[in-house]
Image (cartoon, rainbow, N blue to C red; front, side, top):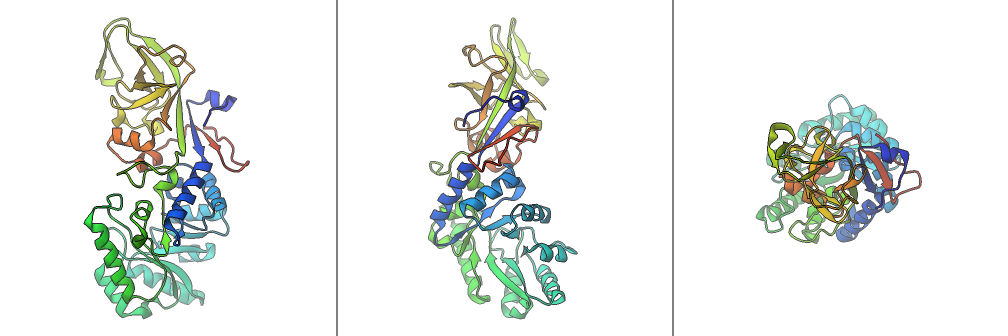
Length: 380
């Protein structure tokens, strides 16, 4: 991905390039891996920070027809983007919003018996069956029907009167760890529950779950992070294509003429003769403060360590010994991309790639490539 000159790009502190073609490639790889199960697409959190308005149409063009988001507001926005898509709302049915779900053709994930009752009453009032996913908790202990609620539902299937179950679903706890015994335990709990419930499609595998093998695929896979380039199988080489590149502009290069410190708190000593480049990216842009003194960027083919504290709008890197051709005001540094993947940045920050992507700031000039001709640069 190359950065083409334009007034908007030149004036931005940083440029976030998002490769919609890579997102589509990742979807097709996951669909092939999950086959013959259907492969849905999770686009919650603004498509993991990449932009739902641009990413969702690219996924639709790649063949995705079933989508999931977390919140009702996300679902409403997605419906405006994709009129024909099947849209599931993972966080469930918000009280008093039944008509909104029904009117917009949104499918709630029912996470407890109270939600099932709400949706059943909505179907009765509408005089027509309504579709829903039903979430069975098999070990996460967050959302979903617990064992006692599942037993009650299995013993009283009339509780689902007026509800068409689009799929029974559950969520894996440790799918990225293939040797974890909890994976098989959850799969067996799910199978046992399905045997006692009315027949419908089933969905268990998230991104990492797809790589656990066919026994976890069931009828519908629900990848999220892997669509956006996060490694779903961190015990090996990342099979996913890189989808993002973040380039920050160097604002100034300073030569240190006496032993001194860099940044707030004077936490980093620098020697006489050092060269420090200041880049227009900070924690307000999603480059986390935890990366102070541990992060790394690339200037051309040269790595440069972050020195001193990352501040709100700026970061400083040590460019001592680097050629002026790459370390000068107006040049760009690769903060994230082929040489610094979101997973690598996350490891340095002590977090996960999901958090890095979903924290991407809104001040970047966003440039979309590899998609439809209508995908334009979005300036801050």
